[in-house]
Length: 320
Image (cartoon, rainbow, N blue to C red; front, side):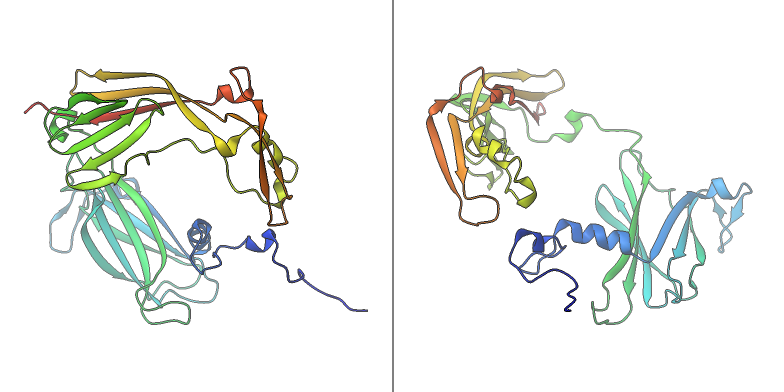
């Protein structure tokens, strides 16, 4: 009797259930698995929560505030000497400080506490700060080169306690409103945005000399995805309801100049296919054909009339 373990070689869709695409690029799940599997755990506490008495730093200065970072080696047999620790502070997404620390003496299943003294002393009240802890390979390994981030964690240090007003943030001058055929145009010295009143989408967007959205390529609702074997009980309805062929019609629009200097553009959009369709070929053949049923027109009473989408777009302006 022959005993076979595992799946038979095949080219079906279920062989795609990994974390790497066929071209060897990582799927989004790759980074999630890496995070879940990392062998280093990191937690953070305020120094004042752990130590109630005032402290002095090694240079004799007072420790006014700080964080205690606890590192836990999840390994059962190996210390963390393969890694070099680094921590970095980010202000509004930009790195402003980076320092290294040793992980050599963190034995298996043990913890080590690091004190980051006075780390909050010079933080601006209008900015957001994050602390990132990383553990990088000291030497090349079979799976990665020296400097590869094997494990990492990120913590919020401080949220903004004071936020600048919209008028302080915006630098581009007053937004001018105009019409170009079926397009609503909003522009100032920094940008030009055009909105299509027929489809209810951004028609084009330009910042300075750089084109962000090409003509006619603005965002639109997309209610269809590629079907897999497990969709065999339901996927035909997607085409019966026309999800593959949605047409977008703006039924109303409104432009509002707000008191705070911003401009809001509102659209109500009905997204509906003109008619039903039928797909032939099943979920596994790889040879599918869509038949448009032009004799089955959709109207207001059909299911897809509930596919209403309100798009809210705001641009900020300042009087100069």
